[in-house]
Image (tube, rainbow, N blue to C red; front, side):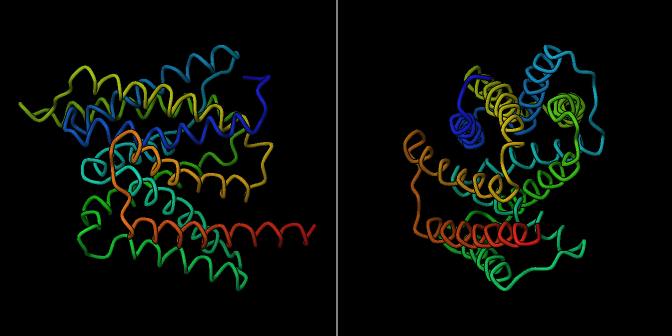
Length: 285
C-alpha cells in the first residue's frame, strides 16, 4: 500500500465507499438477511480487520463510546434504509446529509458563509427535496428518514474523530465497541423468523465490513493528510455517482430522471460551497 500512488489509493477508498451501498443493497434488497444481522456481521468484520492492521503497527487502543454509538447508529440506519431504496438513491441521501450536517455544525459554531456558499447550500437542500418529495420514483419517507439519520450519525462520527492523533487505532477501537452494540441489539431483536441470513448474505456482510469499510477507511485515513479539507469533501461527493453506476451495471437498477436531477443539484451545490471555502482559506493565509 505504501508504494501505491496517492490517486490510486483515493480511487480504491472511494470505490470502497460505493461498494458499501452496493453490498448492502444486494443483501437487503433481496431479503437474504435482516438489517440487524447484516449490521452486526459488518461491524464485527470491520473491527477484526482494523484490529489486525492496528496491532500490526504496534498501536494501543483508543476511540470513545460516543464515537462508537454514532458509528453503530449510522450502520444500523444504513442497513434498515437499504431494504427499500436503490444504491444510488441511498448513497446520494447519505453523503449529501453528511456534508450538510458538517456545514450546519460549522454555522452553529459561528462560521460565516459567502454568497456563493449560501447559494450552494441552498441548491443542495433543493436537491434533497427533489429526491424525497412524494412521487412514483421517490424513496419511501421512512427509508429516506433512516438514511438521513445515518448520514447525520456518520457526520457526528467524523466530527468526533476529527482531532484524532491515531485514526487507525481509534477506528479499530470504535468498531470494536460498535460491534458489541450490534451484537446486543441482535440479541434484543431476536424473534423466530425475524432474524435470518443465507450464506451469500453473510459473505456480502463480511465483504462490506472487512473490505468496503475496514480497509477502505484505513486507506482513506492514510491519504487524508495529503488532501485539503475541501478536496476531501468534493472527492467524497463522487461516491453517489460510483454507486449509481455500480447499481446500474451490477444490480440492474434503473437511474430515474429524478435521481439524476437531484444528484446534479446536490453535487453542484456542495462543490460550489467547498470550492469557495478553500479560496477564502487561501486568501486568509
